[in-house]
Length: 488
Image (tube, rainbow, N blue to C red; front, side):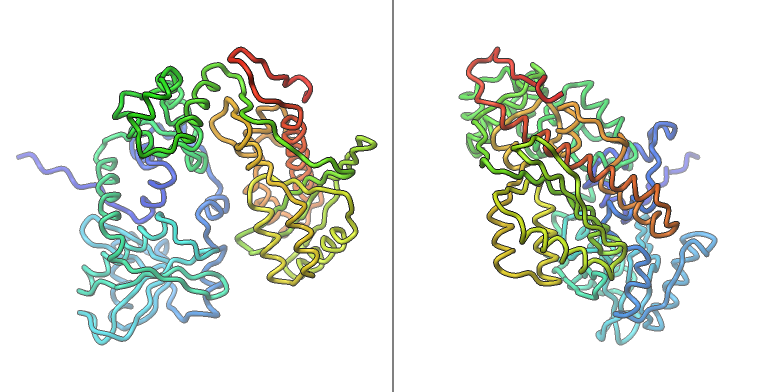
């Protein structure tokens, strides 16, 4: 007699993986392990927005019993130990929740006064994060844990919580997102049962161990998701009107697209169409001339931060004197959290002495950190205004004025397109955090040199982007060829 196949187990972490890249789950189960890239545990924590030693970070805010699943023979045994603690009304760190094929390990289970099958209390779940952002991947994991709790204690928690290292909390109503949660759950269960998701390339794919396979597969069929900033909903809409590849999109008449996609803004249709044409021709387009102020000093600014330790440890910048055409790299370093205010004051003193200047940075992060440090340690209103009035986000400027034949517009992707070579080709902001933690542990000056070299590469790449943009003018004809040689 044939036995029924066992339903694959659904784990809480699958919701995080699904929102980064649906293929992550499929490749984990059905992919060739030899093609899987190893992601260091610390790097994985950074990607997930988690704390290092979250249990210690929560000790000042919550009392709990710590349960370590790895110390048990299996998750079933850890679950039984969790239930015993729950019957006693204990708060539990890393308890194991199970019900049929559902398995979850929430950061914190907290008992609250009330009624449940356990007694005169019921449990709610917490996720310990570096920030109080409530992205879907966090909410849906917490909803998943809350639904398992309902099966165990007979009561569904009304709210679920995120807590940060300072003990700040943020909650949301579980029932408000149930419908979206179940739609996502069903999609994940299809993947668990062997249904491979349609090709789709997104920034989250880079965080997975399978990025090379995602890229290879999507490029192999020239899927329309290779278009920058296209969403999965956009992909489905284009599929519905017969446009599945970048070739289809590049060849499509814009007026026809507008009639088929009436709810899309025309600017969005034009952007997608031009991006497809740029990818097909492998040539950039300039849609409008970028304008920059004429100043004596151009300052290219880049900050390195460790979200795990909540420290902005390096404020680096390249100072270009436009009269002498020379550029000098400078930085302010915070060796630990105690030195962060000193590095901030040095930066403010430097800012106070600047005249006839503009500060360029790439994407929103530097502006965000400036505001955070100003709030944390204070800054004269005149300097805050001086910074804000004399800064330009080159990422926004680039996206507003140019279209490049690349899939992503990160500093690394754009800099590499223009031929800039980082000293460490695999380096990124997350790797810099790994080096910083290694430096704190070992005090190795060679490691600090790697951090500084990486930061200097970032600001030099930022300068390359600005110089290229400043030299461009709008494309007048399809066969216009823009000059990249001047950047080499």
